[in-house]
Length: 442
Image (cartoon, rainbow, N blue to C red; front, side):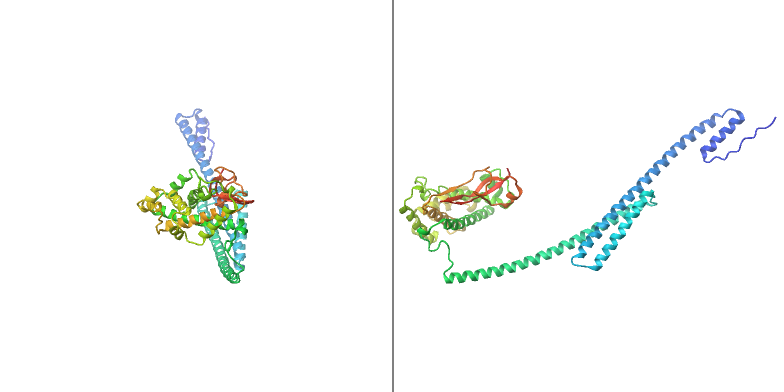
């Protein structure tokens, strides 16, 4: 009987060798052994797992390589930005070496971009993507640091330039101020320049005089408010709570703006019944004042203006001005406020008796009271009626009748509305003097 010679097979891999062995046994016997079949199935399963693992590993390497390529791309772009910033910085002041270095850097990085594009197009894999990622991150951080350094140097140079401009303007301001003082001195010596309220006569009285004295009155009110706020701080008062009790629910653009609430309170008290003779609600309106009465008010204006308020009170303790000062002070300084400021209410008793102690608060009040009283007398000296007006809360802002004490409200609010009137406005004849208001959003 002739022997069947098996065909020699040289498969590659363990799976192919096992498969060929089974085929040879099958040719010899016609039946594959059970153990070989099981072994064949196990090897096939292991081969599928290995193949899946290899595919995942290849995908991971491909993604890592792509991530390294992108990191290098962003790092290159950051370096180009740094080079461009250096190029701009070297142009002013002109630095030929710096411009050349920046130009070379930009050209070099543009070539790197071209190479990266070529690698992406040909799908060239990075042999060491982890190292590339780290180097790209370092390069990007260095480029950002260089950009910030350049920006810092640029801002520093601009700051120095601004400082020199400020110094120049200050010197120019000082020079101009000196020239103005010399000119004012020469004009005063020649008699060509004088205060608009000096040598004032009733026949020559006009709205300009009223505006000039109103500005002095408002300045004195703000001086007294400053003294009062200082006393509040020394007493440990919560200024925010105090301002909110005067004008609740107002949004202030700055912390310092809360002083306008106190100014509003003081102005309301001091200008109450301003349109009535002697601030008395029992008197008739000044609309019916005769020429004789207007002359009397103007004489009072002239008399009190030439004296200090304390001296006038000492000379005439029972005058209308003395009664005005006592009434307004007792309304402004509440007993609880006085006790918080000074620890007692003796000051209130002294003022009620007609004596104003020598304190900064009383002195500031008397100066303010004198200004308000003089403005009142001046208003009653006009032939045409003089009216005082305020704007209610929530009214739309109008540049004709109002002036904002905080420019932030006009800049940051589209439709500003009045939160409260700080200083009232006046209408003297055909002239209108704007009231000062604090604005809030609609």
